Image: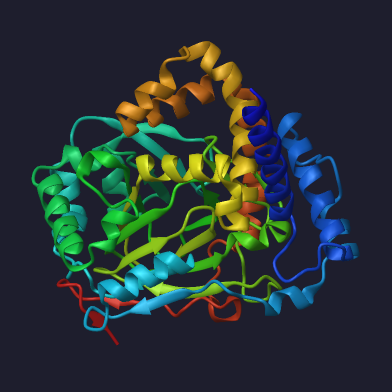
Length: 428
């Protein structure tokens, strides 16, 4: 008993010290005004989550930033996005990117053998008779459930500005797609075995998404997710804007459509922003990894509709979550503070949800990661009022912030539109 008490006392002391250190911004002294501002900021964020505040926040976060934030911290940028070609990418280089906490892109890694599944004539002709989660106007809108074939036809014919999130269905609903995806993943694993170590396992070990969206200027606002992500571009090109999560105190984050995602009031980060934004373009055939918690915004820069597959390794992310929770002293400090934010966020939102769906739901998710989709829908049914309030208050601001429909892209740092021929080759 005495030994246990001794161990527990020092474990708790080290645990608390490590968590508190996680709130200190990188490059700042623990006793600087910058750090004082960071602690005030996190207090306000936690209060917003506990009391489910929307636009009327606990604190004036802009005033905190003006008063306390030292922009010299922007010069300290230890995280980056590494760009590899299919020729110079090696397993050692990929493993080093993972170990350093960096994002990376491997150009044309998949040789885009999935190109055929992004053909909208094919998608329309082979669409199952189902309704899907569709958003119109912008990614933040509340979803409607519309017939897939009719919706895809409108996207193909530029008759509507839709965003379709398939949430694990598309890969199963189209003949041959699952086998082709498995083939692509197996090829990547054989070339880069370190992908397996960081979560890209067998087909059932992650939640997979397919995103289909209208043409040029479709955007998703700046947001972050608890799980890391592996992405494959199939059709269209995206310009990504990333902010590493160590700059959380700039981001003014809020809970999003489900507890594992938070959006930023910064919405769409333009070239005029003071944030330490990393920008790059992904094209068909590119394979892209984004670490957990990184804020990211994407904009489609081709005139035709686009398509991307995303894979989120839930079991691997769960192990990392437990590591960050119980061993914060052996974790990256920015991971510790974000893990705590998501824990508080989940506890506040999921207590009433688990009362509704039953305490066995977390164990069902552990057995089948795709059950997390059921939990997200249950979350909406229980705390829908809060979600509706967030969407209604912020949705119009997303359009304004993203400058939807503007043709003058260069002043905002977006690349010129890319046009391709019927075989996917870029037309210069």
